[in-house]
Image (tube, rainbow, N blue to C red):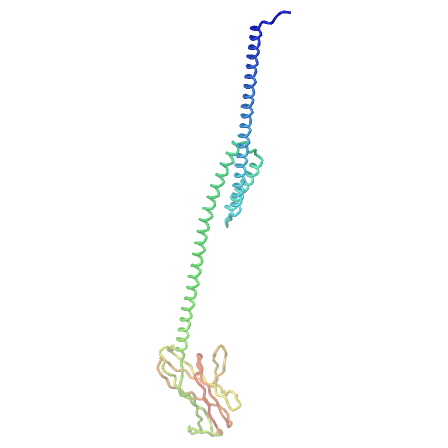
Length: 304
């Protein structure tokens, strides 16, 4: 049996150990590379997950902002049809944009940025609407206030005119009342055939009514006719062939006798005779004196 060379055996062991060492180093290297690769993959996955989460949060925030903007648009109102029509159009744009955002993936950053710009545009449009509505409301309030002031002024003017008219009417009434001819001293007496005053009915042949038209500078100047109406104790109007009629208070009346005088605003005395009455009965006779404007007076005569 051949003997093994110790030197050769040692060399073979050393060679085998070198091979084993190289293999271990290779294995360690491969393990280290695998660990690094796994770490890189974990990092990439974690980063992508964080990014996706962040993009989803941005999408949710953008959606919430759009919904809030929709609420702002819904709260706007105007009394003007043209602005309301524009508001309705903008509200529809907001609704459509909300639906598009919901259907778009959060990772589509380019589209999301586009939606953000549209959101900014719609916000600017809304601010412009607010300015327009505020301006129109301010103008409307001013016009309403002006109209109310005009109505108050008109009412005040009407009240003032009514007051002035009342004063004018009152003054006119006073002037009219003051221009009416008045009388004093109205009396009636009975005369017999001897032209003497008597109170015996069987001897009376005529009645004499006397009165004075008092001074009045406001009264119309010119001819004035005075009418008398004499009634017997039975209330029957005494008339003769010279009877006349006149209008007083819108009513036609028969006069027992009348006389015209020239009235110039100064006091005028006048007498009016009533003749041609066939007979007189005992009792109280009444006489009323008139112009076409007024009742001058009333008095009585007792015959036995």
